[in-house]
Image 1: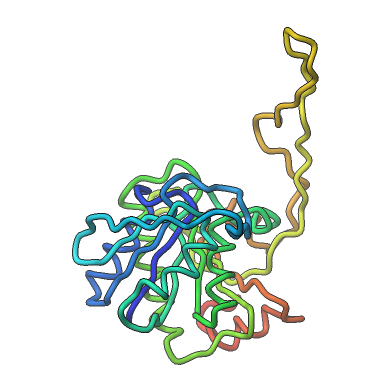
Image 2 (image 1 turned 120 degrees about the vertical axis):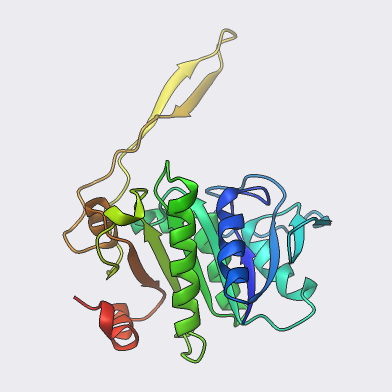
Length: 251
């Protein structure tokens, strides 16, 4: 298979390299197209009013490009920069989970969504904070194996896979589960301050405050120590599609 790898943490992110290692060790071809700088929480922003400067960067056993743009820009440009058709797009591994309502803000998820809008199968891959290299590589290998299973299974129109994992050592992971997204909203707010010159400004509060997660949703299972696979898209019943195509993972 030919994988296009992208992310929102930037071209130098360790999670991107983990995905590349896992794909190459399975004998796959890899093209990397990622933002030049950190682009977390930019959601599905596309660059419309500035040129997208592209720079080829050294990468072991792969072509790699850094783009002065957003994750969604990179998903679009990656297929143009590639010398062969793309079989699957992987976005990540993001440093921090992208589950529940976080998916609406995520540049990682939006890059995968843009790939689907360009008719390329795609998966967003994220891990909770403070994961070490061994744990990231375990998740990368899991992502590659799931993508291999999807080679001949068409994803529903505009739908993408979303894989999240705990940052626990892999031997402490509970079994991979299928789950719907949590619908719990963020409750954090802003702290109002006044500058020495009298200007009013705001800082987003540190620390995340979120409503309780419903049992069996992606965030609830992730907090219990399960890696979780979800389907994000316009389907009325995403879980039925997941269970039909991953019957061994269904609860």
